[in-house]
Length: 95
Picture 1 (tube, one colour):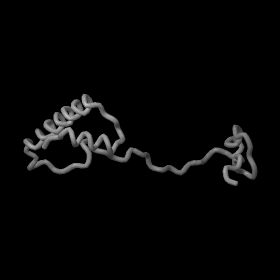
Picture 2 (tube, helix red, strand yellow):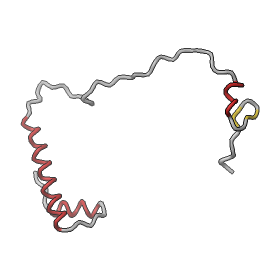
Picture 3 (cartoon, one colour):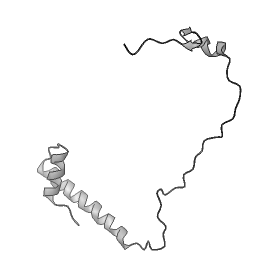
Picture 4 (cartoon, helix red, strand yellow):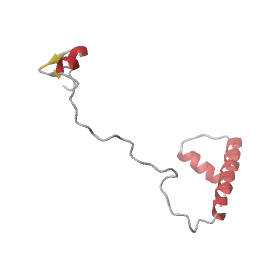
């Protein structure tokens, strides 16, 4: 598979890019080099390789929830600009 200059022009038009002739040639060469490199992957024997979704093992690193006493309201509201009826008072954002 190879990329032609018309393919680069088409993608540039879709992306609303104005490319010079030199840029079109450069991108055509670069994209073809990328495709040639990717085709090397077809030479690999992947018969006994299980499919994966990620190369690294991912696991949840969150700690277990532990019930504990929370801060007293007086301490929580100490640095609040305004408090009303045990709630933070903020300027209205909706009319």
